[in-house]
Image 1 (cartoon, rainbow, N blue to C red):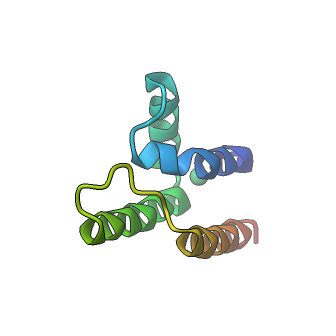
Image 2: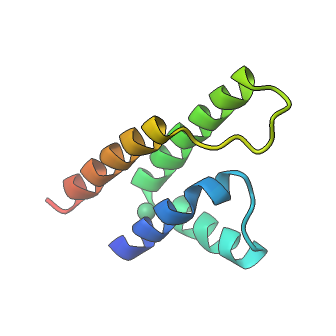
Length: 86
Ligand SMILES: [Zn+2]
């Protein structure tokens, strides 16, 4: 698995969560994420954050991922990528 794919997933992730991507792109990300444990984890945690945001702001669509969450996830993600390279 190529690390660029992971970075690509990260770059498109908020659109991915909102299913706001062209169908082909979504499928590519799906395919990558299925085979990539760090990405699965990452998507799950982002999804939870987004769900939490929706809970506190019902009826407001779309809910942007808060900057703090994005930063925390970016760090966790970079860490997990570094772990895999050992
Ligand atoms: Zn990945």
